[in-house]
Image (cartoon, rainbow, N blue to C red):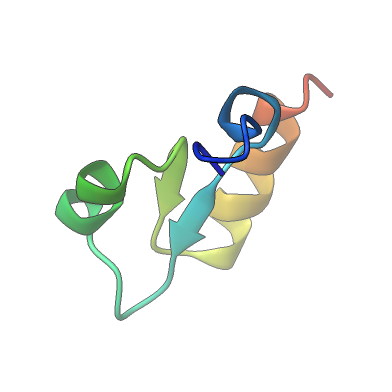
Length: 49
C-alpha cells in the first residue's frame, strides 16, 4: 500500500484469536480488536459512522 501511494486512503484492521495488539502495532494497523463486536464498533469509528 505504501509503495503504491495508497496507505493514507486505506484503513487496516486486524484481529481475532491469532492476532495480538503487539502484532497489529508492528504492522502499522489502524485498528485491532480481538472480538467481532469490538471490530464492528472500530470499523464504524474508522469510517466516521
